[in-house]
Image (spheres, rainbow, N blue to C red):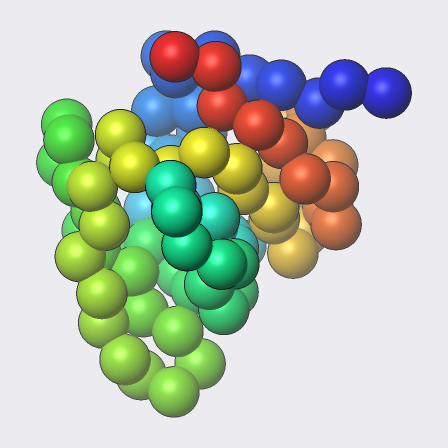
Length: 86
């Protein structure tokens, strides 16, 4: 089964996750999966995430190719990998 989300829907999801209780794990272009992290600040093109070790990372949203959530959110299942279609 193909789990894909388009960019506008993904950006809407990120807005719902900002400063929330749901964590997101990302796979960036050319890199391996990150740890589950919470979105603490979101802009139109980038976000700052904080992992369980309190490490903060700035991520360019356009570099994200896949994601996974630790809890379900409005039609997005937990523990399911979703690809982003640009």
